[in-house]
Length: 241
Image (tube, rainbow, N blue to C red; front, side, top):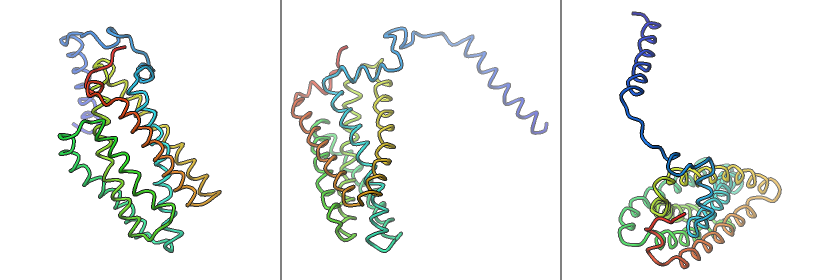
């Protein structure tokens, strides 16, 4: 047949599929027909919810502060350990290994603790080992600290997604989750830019200090949210708008 003819046949199959769907698949009522959401519907829902709004703010703040850790680790390895790529690699290996082991533990932990309580405890545990970083300790100490911190991240993220999913009405769920992810994604580049400016002007110690202080403040804020919403019903029942 020749390559061009094969492409024509392939394109024709897509056109036939389009016609079949258009003719035989019945149209269903869409989310737009039900609640008429607009582009910022997810953001509006978050702002109006007394639980998810503060949680989303904490998530976005973490999305701003934590890129400083990723930006600072290779600089620390370069300046403190004679530009050792091996040590820089070990730092990132600790991040991955901690998250992997934490994921295995999270599978069991989510069955024993309520999502808000589990994520609140894990967030507090996350920031504790990071406090060694501003003191620029030997690399094995940094390795252990990074492993322990990242061990906690699956215990934070999984329950947070569970709360976000359970709290949001079905027709808004996709938009709310998309809104949180999108805003968090926008915060991360700003965090990297800020980290670069801090490193260039003041060095690695102020950067690590800002990261751990900011993360600790957000962990404290999240702990306050957990205490304010200790009632399990606040977690599992969708909010009404």
